[in-house]
Amino acid sequence: MAAVLEAPFATPFFSSKPHHTNLPPSKFHTFPSKPISLTLRSTHSHSCAAHASPSPPQDPNPSIEPDSDPNRDRRRIVRVAWEKIVRWSRSWRSKANTDVLQRTKKVVVLGGGSFGTAMAAHVANRKAELEVNMLLRDPQVCLSINEKHRNCNYFPDHRLPENVVATTDAKSALLGADYCLHAVPVQFSASFLESVAEYVDPGLPFISLSKGLELNTLRMMAQIIPQALRNPRQPFVALSGPSFALELMDKLPTAMVVASKDKKLANTVQQLLASSHLRISTSSDVTGVEIAGALKNVLAIAAGMVEGMNLGNNSMAALVSQGCSEIRWLATKMGAKPTTITGLSGTGDIMLTCFVNLSRNRTVGVRLGSGEKLENILSSMNQVAEGVSTAGAVIALAQKYNVKLPVLTAVARIIDNELTPKKAVFELMSLPQVEEV
Image 1 (cartoon, rainbow, N blue to C red):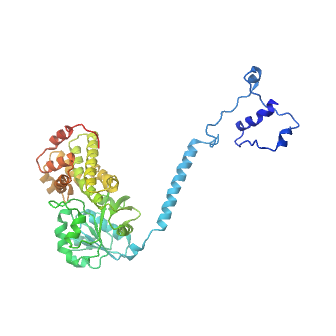
Image 2: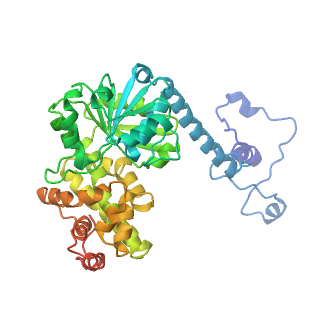
Image 3: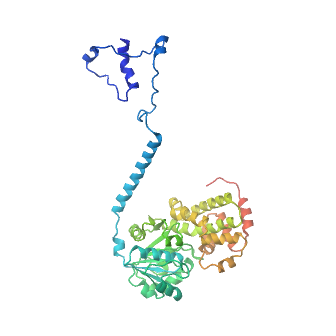
């Protein structure tokens, strides 16, 4: 009888199926014709224990089969997660609106620097029928682009698409344009735009590629463009993010962000620029995107000085971390979103500009840290390092918002030739030991 009563409790140890005890009453009185052979477990019978076969260990997780392979299960979980991402991506792409590129007939690029040229080539490659006009000052560069399809100053070894043409005539360049990519350095933007304002359509969307703060006025491009064009309603988008012109020309994978207070316009520009090698995110935080793009250039000069002085990797990490905090302090005081500062236009651009040798601002810092004079450095460069002119404006802006920026202020003092890099390091390391914020 003991064997019969123990059977229901023994079953689960040998079967993964649940044992049902709610059988009809008649079943409890129907015994099999042959006796049930069960091993009785008793704490009082040493003889039974001696002959009992060991029970298999109970699986602590009954949902996993005993013979499952942990590595195989892990790979399956990863595969399923990846397949979900791919399905989501395909579904999203199938709904993407491609009308923007189809409707666009002409894009004008103001400025013929490295980044303006790279973006002109990128947009031209999006559609062979698209007319891309570059408005330049130098007739020789225009000739090089139109006859040899090369920007002789910046990309002599890269052939530009056939549908990129250059001109010095503002009226013909701007006539009938659907979009305008503004790539003129910040310090020269206002005077340049004022000179061409009469040819600019009031509804022409301006996509700003320029990063920095205007000296004296402390304006960013979101203020400079509409004020210079005398049109407060001029459609405006800021394009920013970790992107070297050379890598764009080589069609290497890149990600950037477009910011506009007009969500529809941001989405439209996203569709215009996004391609298989350029990801474009959207944002409504114009202030955050622009101020991060301006301040990261000043921080890159500081990072370069650490490299030039051979202060080591610990110093580099500490300085850039402090600089990121200073950018966040000022940006959020100005109304920027913290998530913008940790995104592509903030942390992403900071990492690229501070750590990679292609950075113009980092190069200035390296040479300053090595002992060169600023005037000699700038005279030897054929491109603008915006951080040099932006540094003083950044500190004026910080005073306006009552924010202390030790690292960025030190850079401004060094650029003004009122502090040496070595002395700056000593002073920064002597700052009070405070709680991290």
